[in-house]
Image (cartoon, rainbow, N blue to C red):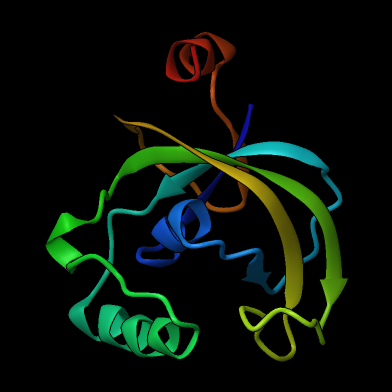
Length: 130
């Protein structure tokens, strides 16, 4: 199954806060389910900037030390991709907006992330979403 590493707290927002747009500098042509992997890295500065943005969207974030990192935390469907603008408040200017739907949390599974879309072995996926 395809997976995408997303820095926290954005990974959390995709799975738990209806973040329906993932902003990327490159388009995605794949459609279907992908795993969301929460990156290990997240600085306090990144967290505080994201917290301010999320507040403007009406979303309260968990504390930084309560966010899973270095783990696969859920599944979401990629249903489209547009270059800005978008009607969603989650979209950033001059970015490709990956349209996301149907987020589902799973029990966090430690996993090493990668750049871009990457494959997670099917046998591991079956255990995760079983």
